[in-house]
Image (cartoon, rainbow over all chains, first blue to last red; front, side):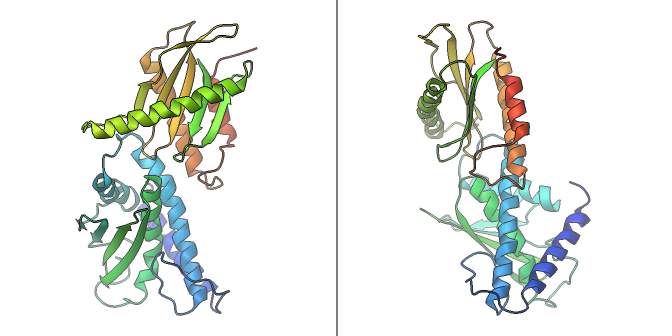
Length: 173
Length: 147
């Protein structure tokens, strides 16, 4: 991957642009269960949906390209491990710090120094602003999982910067 | 040389199917359709057998079958499945030259990387028919030259 800073700058601009876009509430579209919604108005929730959708499409493409040479995945846990190692290294140049599961379809991925948050603060400053910077990554995870055949719901939470947790809930059909 | 190439989506509908234009194309469509059952069988068999490594290349799907209409070919079908459950099926005429396994594998690898390129194209919506000209020209280079 080219210099990581390029993606970080682009991502910051994307969030700033989409957040500022709806200063007056747009047509009331409910956010639905995707991504983290940080805004009080429905217009701002809609722009987070757009951001999450962008992450989804990128995740679909990455889900096709990254496992190209690897052998077929045997089970769900293998797919999640692939996300934590290969996907994270390809996008953020580091691996995910921890993966926990309850073996019933819920996985919690924890990153102790998330590259998109690390430049902002470390600690509790800017805690309210942080979730919208995680929306794109939630969509990225959901898109990659969907290409690999797993329907899921991904949400993110921040307790203190730059540590963040992504919760993946597999939807059983 | 390939006589027919097909890309089938995860939900088992064709994303791309092209056969060499001389013969009745419906016949090739039918052959590809019947091969899908064999592909599904191989995938599920591999899952149950608890094999450590699952290969993407599935190999020869069907014993060869004589083409009843003149000119007669010996047609072999080969399959390949990606991690995203997209299947490639190729019908190959092997009466003239016996194509070695390695050549078939390399043809599938080329197909896979072209398909990945199509997927990464932002103007392509996953699930649509593939209309990329680059993909078309790659497939043309693999298919038999018919005057």
